[in-house]
Image (cartoon, rainbow, N blue to C red; front, top):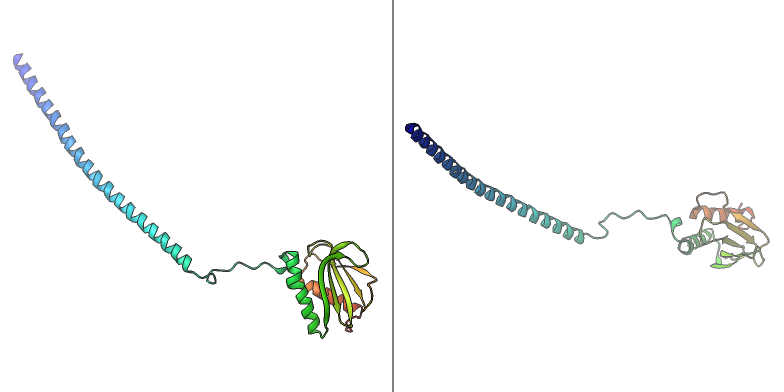
Length: 199
């Protein structure tokens, strides 16, 4: 039995040596793997750092390129239609000059053209009125009820040196009011009364 005990102790010792060796060996392997992980982590970090630096450089270059572009090089925004501009701007910068140009091209001289918030001829209510006096031909008053080209409009006509006697609605059935439409209807009304001498 003692022999069995001794042999058992030897086996146990060998096993414990093996067990001790194995953990030591495993520990050595683990430390190697830790070093490998550290190296690979460092490489990944270095790659990330390089990638980040490239991104920053790229963004900086884009900012510099954008700053160096002329405003003319950038695509322009689509201009809004003149009819969508504020009422006063539309009338002063587009409608009145267009009326003057049209009558001048037809050989008429405009003595006076005004735009103000005043009393509408005949009706006497206050609204925005364009008064146009065409030398030795006629006068007309184009009235806007509100400061909006889509608001109710009226027109009054008269011969020179006379007061208007009739007020007529103007562009009441039109859904879309444009500069050309306003001008063509003014000419149509004046021609209809034979005030321009053209029928």
